[in-house]
Amino acid sequence: MSWTDERVELLKKLWSDGLSASQIAAELGGVTRNAVIGKVHRLGLSGRAKAPAPQTAQRPKKPVAAPPPRPHRPTAPTPITIGATALKADIVPAARPQPSTQPKVYSLSDAPLINNASILQLTEQTCKWPVGDPGSDGFHFCARRSEAGIPYCGYHARMAYQPVADRRRTDRRIAGAA
DNA sequence: CCCTGATTCGC
DNA sequence: GCGAATCAGG
Image (tube, chains in turn brown, cyan, purple):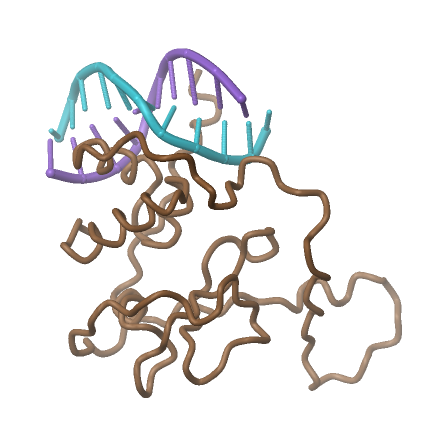
């Protein structure tokens, strides 16, 4: 995945919005936070104003609002309780669609219609691209206006219908490689 | 250990 | 130019 004009533009926007490099990397997809930081430096926009955006640095112990109820599948009747953990696996992040057809060129959509959208708030008009780690606090859906006929905004539509780039998490130290 | 950005340097 | 590896820190 390369730094297209559009991706650079989004990078600039998110960076100036105070998002962290890893958050931006997650939103862009196909790049690591190292790549984002490297690009930021090459663009000469390192150092930014104080970020009012909620940094993931320290998570608040209590969510501001009650956590959204976890949806569960209506298909199977509630099984007889053997273990109490049955619901755990119910949240499955929307699967990234596999590459199919090459879509037309979409324009970059605007800001999210819903900030921090939960799955329950998604409608026909909102991009259903999952952002962040399901189960983690910051997880939400993109929720920019979706393009007609497809469940994604212009930007994510392109990600969705492109071959899934290897989403490397190589920022981890290699264990054992003393 | 989780995370952050900064820097280096082989590609 | 790119970004993994590394560094320095919260």
